[in-house]
Image (cartoon, rainbow, N blue to C red):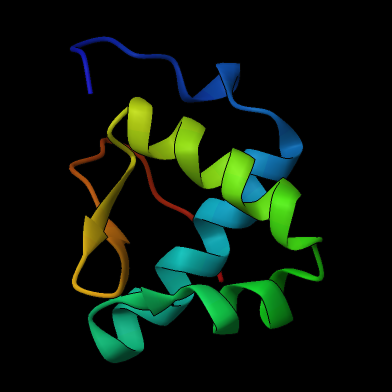
Length: 78
């Protein structure tokens, strides 16, 4: 994630997916794709597209067979 990246540039869907990852990562250390699909209510294609954007910007990182949180400078409520 680049310095000064604006979290407000994320779409509502991206923030929703980030919050789903964060919620699971806090509990388990990572978020699994199948669980993210169920918890987000999104179609798998939409979820994967959002995860790819979040990974590209460094908010989410691949972790084992799932996803974890990247470095960030903001908080979310979940």
